[in-house]
Length: 250
Length: 277
Image 1 (cartoon, rainbow over the protein chains, first blue to last red):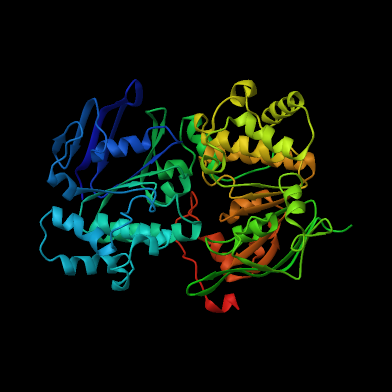
Image 2: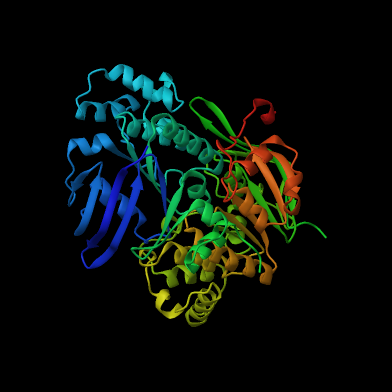
């Protein structure tokens, strides 16, 4: 697969006076998995949200599958192509809707008719089975909730998945399961991933290339091979790498 | 030398409508002035163990133990008053998220002073001095300014340092840290851990470090207890993690993605019912 799935040129996002993103550009090829790392406030989530239309951007361009988008308006086609999974599985599912209702919503919005079969298939695909269909989200564990969130994103058969720290609220052991699930989905459907994480280990496991962000700017873009060989130029990338190796007594 | 803390056959259970839930089922260990790590997944009972020692278990829960004693004081039969005197003064606990564990409507400095004056008779002036000194000890650059700030005005890393300062201001002998850095950024995590590490070493405290991250715990502690379903499945010195025998411990070690290892898919933890026996 070739061609560009998603491209961002000189994107600027301003909240009141605060410049959250300052001229960020990136291009993700079809079928690629691209990672964004950085500390809190570096703008990595803002970039994802600006792409998804959850916040508006002042200037710059966004192209998804050859179509240009501006501000925060996105048409229905956009959401058929791009779906997002959020960080906190406790906050991203409606507390008073059953799993069935949660999964029905995107199907209803996009006018699907074979909803029953699709919901059953979506649950099956994330390894939950139909026993979970009529439960509420508070009856599920964190890992199971994140599976539902992934099912909700995949049920529209998107081409691009935006992942905003999909495993940082989960235990290390559950994280492995969710990462495997995402990788499998990507393999089966030829998805393109744009994944945000503060954990370099996770990003290097999941992605082919990654960009390091700091203070609203992209510091550096490196391939995972280069990261493994430590062939990067920025000190900040090194700091992150050291941090990901864990605590050392000095 | 008698150990600082003795826990023998600790059990914590919660009555619910569907029967008793046994959160902790027979945990035993002793602790001197050392660093002990407790590792396990959510629901393994690691936090409830810490809370039972601290005396923070909800009132309707049932706690039993053959021995649960701190420095010769039997914690289970101790009066509420004795426990209040211990809590904060000799045993302190750092909680996970400073956003929720600090009082949102009280300036940071006053919260630290409150802890101090609950346990020691000190003048306001001296309390302020000691609170400022403590803020400085956790490497807050401008303690005078931070002293008057409210918790929402500081970052997560700073909030957790304030939490550490508040817990250490009375000079406790035992510190329980329940996931102290899970809510923080990776880069900030290291700073906070370094501060905690230095203070624990300088003051010669006993430390119980509770976390789900086995690697982090092993780099921080002398000894690690691995908990599964309310029981300790393995105890091992952290220098010797590679020698872990229990499949659960090995699973915890292997499930983390690391840079430079090409493992697709990641090994997933097995959970066998016989481990709970």
